[in-house]
Image 1 (cartoon, one colour):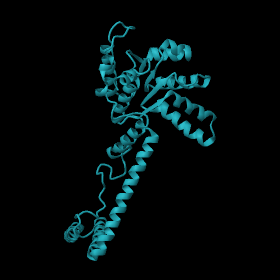
Image 2 (cartoon, one colour; image 1 turned 180 degrees about the horizontal axis):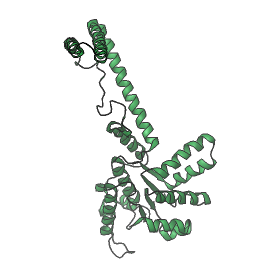
Image 3 (tube, rainbow, N blue to C red; image 1 turned 60 degrees about the vertical axis):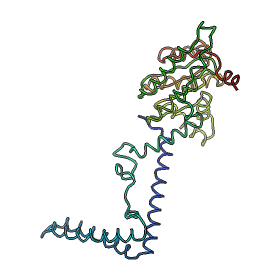
Image 4 (spheres, one colour; image 1 turned 120 degrees about the vertical axis):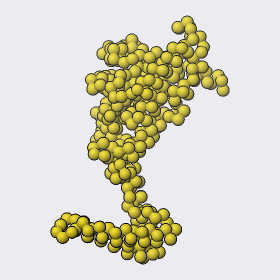
Length: 331
């Protein structure tokens, strides 16, 4: 699983800020309680001193350090009980000023060994959903909300209603998302505008992101612009654009929307080829959506790009009548 560095940085910033605020609130509460009952502050000093004393005895050896440590611990327990009662008498929860970690798994470090802890991954998923929500309606765009009734109309191209076919397309996309693992294959969604390609792409993005995989959803226009800025932009712009290029190349799942809407230049053809070829070579999954079929892509781009889509992607053809027009007629 390749975490998105940009998203992980945001999650870490939130993680650190949350820990800082919790520590600051504890410190403020401690000063408040000390001000109301100075004996609590005195007890805290005594407890810290006995912990240090017990550690020194255990390390020193000689005599009977175990008995001495036990005596110190017994005294310590008495002070802890007095401290708890005094805090409770002031109307505060007994352990409210103890520096206990919010997450016992990582002790608020964010990592267990070299792996992100579940507490950090929770923030990572939230930040990833925020990023995806800039372009997608993740609340409304779900597989169950994909309305097959819009595919009931007779299609003169196929000579039948596309409903059964589109139900199969939805099922393929759902299985792809629910069973996703890095390198589990790629999809090519092709068909006329307004037939649900972007909708199902959003459904895939939402489900895969919820699993904790890094998902980058972007338009072909934007991805090509990152390559352009990385090559020709000013110094500061180049660094940021190069980071976006690398996100597109290295994420667990790239969803490249509206391929064919970007300007057709030698640089755009080169950028599209690099994205598709690099991800295939490294075994990374991609979902490409386009109004163009493979023959049109071969003419617009290169036969090599069309060959990669035809040979290494599962092609899903979208049929029917423009859903946007149908919704407009219903309103």
